[in-house]
Length: 242
Image (cartoon, rainbow, N blue to C red; front, side, top):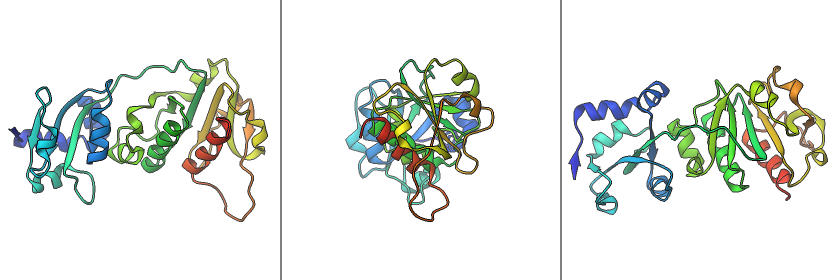
């Protein structure tokens, strides 16, 4: 079992930030459940596992380096308030332009928790591809990975200019709006693109001209708006035929 060097510790801490993740093409997966899910994902490259002594033996394999770290070191590496006892260093998978006929698009989602939850929602409803606008939260941010609860390994993500992408798609485009047609205009189990806008300003002005239908979720109470992930869950349930 290997030990962690000072340089390696600094490198791991750099993965807390997007610049470090981009430079090294690596990201962190924290917690036993998420690490176990990562290990079950055949398309994911795991470079090493770091674990405290209490459960290190669980991850010993012939072809995967396992590094024992002291609890004090794990506190410095982990991004969680309560440090985990195991984490994995994984390779960021290459981006691939979506090829399916049902695609979820996210326009300016900034909150990592929302993005992670949306990845989990897409995974739940069997939506395998998500297109995310440039400038949105990084899906390999540790908070996003944690909130996705393993769905980050099963949902393909593609970052691009949303207006350029949608302009080339020969599919109906449905946009979640505060004002628009009610849910019956979102056909169940149909091909198309569903756009969820940012938490603060909704769908951006440059994307609006491409909408085929503006879809709103009926409001019966006094709440001003819905959280982006909650709205996404309601719309995906309708879109997928529930």
